[in-house]
Length: 323
Image 1 (cartoon, rainbow, N blue to C red):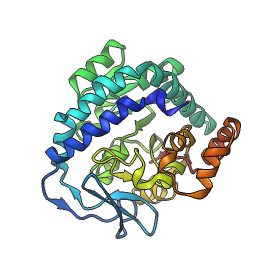
Image 2 (cartoon, rainbow, N blue to C red):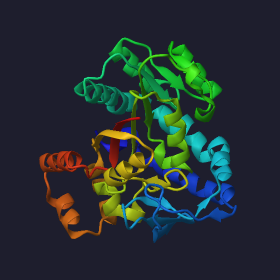
Image 3 (cartoon, rainbow, N blue to C red):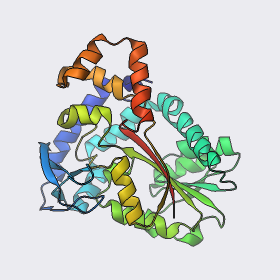
């Protein structure tokens, strides 16, 4: 898979341009200081981007926005901004087929493989913030058993119903255990943790819906991924106001244990770190990566991508845990 298949350069640049304009419109309010979102230690300033300050935790290497605007500013941005409308109505729509092929189908198979490896059976998938139900449909097809989608948007919830999926049309914090199937469940959530104003609040809301043997599988961006570490402030993945928390394999374990979760598996199955570095090679300063990107064959680039994924240094992270 290549980066251009899921976020074509021209469309992605326009999205980032619109987002920069939206920052000036929606984020004028007072900012509040916070400690590391993973371990609670005081962060150290690293860089400023689009008027957002990023700090790094000296204890666990989490990258996070601090100080950050109040939560209401983010809620207004996600509800009304032109960049989010462009993301949903243009970028995602134009890459829908490619995303299903390159992201959602492989992801559904990978999650089933991890769960089956741990000999966990007879569970129902509950996808948090499931959007139009693309993952829920894929996992339902593989499991031959309908998944449940928690989705507050009336438009998105209706799209799920068209796919004959079970929908709970509520915000997560308003969902009750009685709304869910009375059986073992595997909760899922994809590319959300990096957006959240308060990750601890979110994980507590997930936990209250879980029974003892239920699973929680989620993906998020890693601060110690090869492309993010190398490009750092120039990384297009570090894009405020969207991505404000970057956990990593070490810090996500600290975070989950703090909230009384048991870790089953942490991996970084990313596939486009090297492709991202190749696309942004003019911004790469590290001598090793500059020479590697210039001289390595496509075969060796593929080997390097597999290596950094295997040793948990890709920027795409997947976690399997239970209450």
